[in-house]
Image (tube, rainbow, N blue to C red; front, side):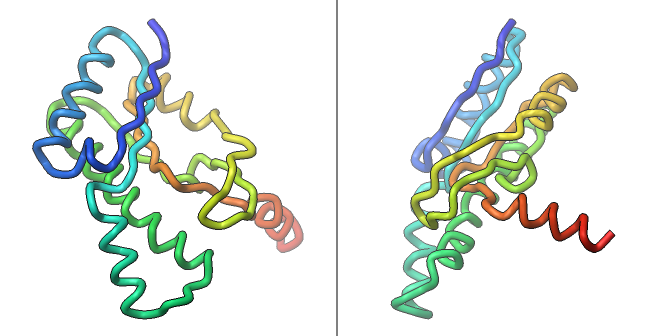
Length: 153
């Protein structure tokens, strides 16, 4: 059929019951013959909890480190959602922003997506996997990374 992209915020996956409901929603679309890409946020109050813990350490975190801390919530969500789908008999794979990669500008906590390398996503969909992507994640250093790697080889 087609490609269906779904986005679920933190309240939609706040607990195991809600996570199972989201799985059922995804499965309904997949069973219609669609390829599925799902983007998820951190569960429920996870981001609030991480910010609270951050404030126990510092009142002035570097923006980059703040974003690194908050991105952990999305990684937990993608892993849990894939586990739930797998438990129901569906092949799923979780991907972080850097694994795809999703290229952003360098404005921490307010980045804009510049480009998404869709090849990896498409390859997993061609293998009939449900692709689950962490929201709030990207990379802005890719060009420097590849140039560094070229110089070292």
